[in-house]
Length: 279
Ligand code: ATR
Image (cartoon, rainbow, N blue to C red; front, side, top):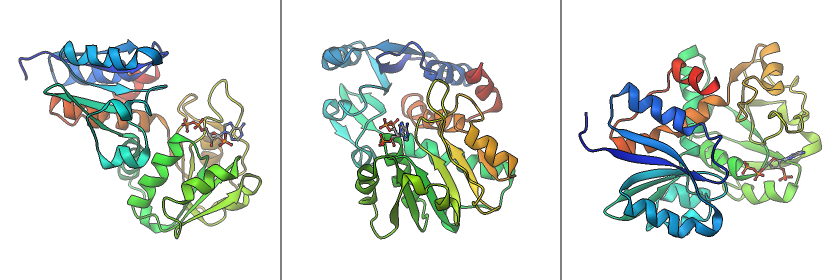
């Protein structure tokens, strides 16, 4: 147990509804660490000055959420290759007055799937087959990069705006193909992984209209949306007895590297933590 008080938090605007304080407070309690993690509301026009204030007030680091993930790239003294590749910073560590930025979304996405596969004892791995990625926003960028790194042999991207999918295809042109959004049902045919990276299907957003009935029986289906916990996509997958990985796990796992950097302990994702965050 450390004697010094570790101050951390999450910056964004709006920020009141962030789940991150629940996650980090749970871990601080669980491991008996002396520290705090709070929401810090920072408007875009104050970003530079308010971040400087955090440094001057002795913060050890912070998470970054909407709308600052891209702007934060320029405010860091150093950003690692992962954040550079993804083009966004979501985790900052402060050391000797300097800001070090990284991005943990890819880690969160991969660990969520790996953790579930291991827990459920499924015969499934990233290298085994093709992936279908729905969407081409910021989340898709991190996820496609992560899938390539994990050795997925081929990826099909489909997005309403085809040009954005073609932009992401440049991550690995020899492995990635793009199909029209209208072809998404057929694109399920020979894949081992289907991932929704759009916000479609989230409470308050339009539904994700897709029919995954052509997916093989061995496929794993993941949605990054976690409210509702079981989206229509995941319900469809469950009804077909496919492997289902919930989106909530990505949120929990992406928080782990920041906690480790600031407090010196890689925290675990537990069932209890999931229940706390979903309450
Ligand atoms: P994030 O950074 O969280 O991924 P984003 O950059 O706004 O968010 O990306 C949202 C994704 O959802 C995009 O792929 C978007 O498609 P477009 O690139 O065509 O905008 C997709 N999306 C949002 N609303 C959609 C809709 N009604 N139908 C189909 N796709 C939609």
